[in-house]
Image (cartoon, rainbow over all chains, first blue to last red; front, top):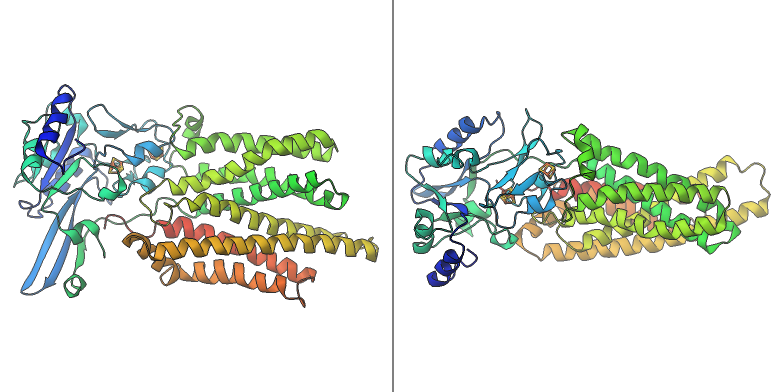
Length: 209
Length: 309
Ligand code: SF4
Ligand code: SF4
């Protein structure tokens, strides 16, 4: 999966060599996103996320002046990075990466040192005010393990969020990645995010100039 | 670009600062401890009788400060009773795991060292002093790594962090020793002959000389750091702006650089004031306040700019 920006051949070669193990990822097609926040709400309900904190949300930016103006939506969630700084830095290995690429937190183990929150370049982690440990998006691992899609993907009315196995060349995510120009957030961090965006806006992604 | 002037973030989630003042204070106390330990050992190794009192004072300060410091860390945990996990579930890639061991071994060696200093056992106090120095340096160097390895934050993610932390350890360690030493001089000055007092004052002036040297080194490193930040990637520029012109400028420019650096430098190098005990005492206090401001600016200022909003 390293060379997503490279040629398709090379990409599918590496995909075939790892056929057996799944590697989950998400493509967010912003051409379809209407900024309805259904994903944020579904996530809150599915994961019982307390008030004032969010595992996934839709950032909204706006540019231009009437009549040449537009709003841009950017759904944000854990990138389930290939090289997750949060996992590298967690002192008690409470944050870990599963074989299928999903980055999780063991809530019984987390000591709440918050180093991972400070380390994640995407500011995706937070302290759950009720459980008093750190938490974040899990790609709804509990649903995936039962064969369901993540709740946000399930709820999206325009199918802007597409989830699947990046190691399977026939999965919808792989096909989208093969056929579209894609971006990831903060590529320069070397984290190799597994959440890809189609049509993401520069200002929305980079926040500032 | 005009068009981007009209760009606004309409909605995102609130930004939090995960590591706060407690962590800054923790860094500050380890700094003081490591600094005073190194000074103690050096004074002890030099073996000159005039340095004996310094070696003793610092030998007590070092473990004392380092027993308070980790308490800050534990209080800051969301799950305080689970802190023992730090010694059981180890992650070799995490600087906090390195720290769990350094923070245990270093105070131990410092206590043993202090014991031998006070019982007057020369060879053993030297031995444990020499063993303790790399520990003292690592205990402080590793805190620099904690910040440097959280690579999302432009202010932290530089190799200079561990170095800067070590130099500031030196600065505030010496300042602390000067303060304690002068305090002791004032307290016990009655029975002393004028010659003895002169000798003691000479000693303080020597230490002030070293202090001046380390402040200059510290200021130079900070200058290098900020100069590179200002010309680096956009996030680095933004944080450089934050500390030089933005919300953290009063702490950075005002307290850290001016009050804690420039003023003490002037006081300690001007011939009229540099040998005055009161001035030396005040200058050292300013230096210590400046280093505390530095911790605050680095820790809290480093997280001030939202990454996702
Ligand atoms: S996005 Fe942040 S929390 Fe998620 S895996 Fe990457 S570094 Fe960790
Ligand atoms: S807060 Fe929890 S998950 Fe995060 S680094 Fe600390 S122990 Fe690990």
